[in-house]
Image (cartoon, rainbow, N blue to C red; front, side):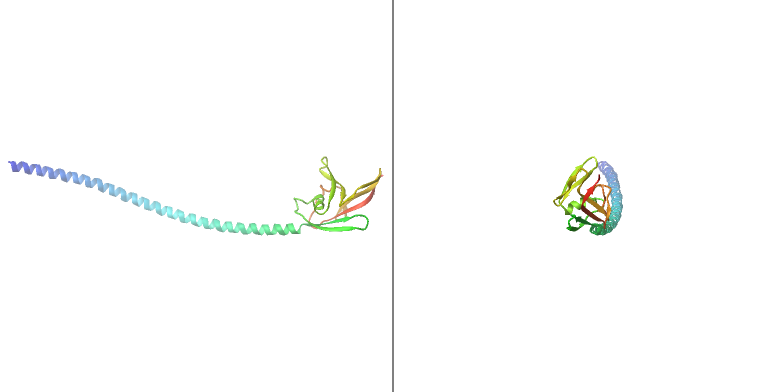
Length: 192
């Protein structure tokens, strides 16, 4: 009987061991399957990431090409702008009324400093008065030759012509364009 009890205990122990090892094996097998699924999911995500990275590399290459194209366009526009600045030229002439005539070539940028006053001040020593009410300058003298009053109705004054036409505006209000000729003439003026 003792042997029969021992066999029963051994059989029960063996069955318990078999059940316990089967449950443990099933648990670890499920963990292994989860790991395999996570591994496959990670591999898919890495492949997607690699594909996205490839697309980003292609986009970066395209952007670099576009940037190079824009840079070339910018450089071309800059060259054209510089040529335009170089071509914006006016001739400024000073006729002192005594046979002395000076001629100057003045470069300027249209739309920025293209007034008779701006191009004249580049090549001459001006004596002027600013009148805020007119937003303009009255030229009192050029290169040391100043206006001179003769009497109440006459005197010698600096008048300017643009393309041989007497200006009806002040020097700061009169625009200059490429190729214009500005002539300052020190002349006798009578208004009486």
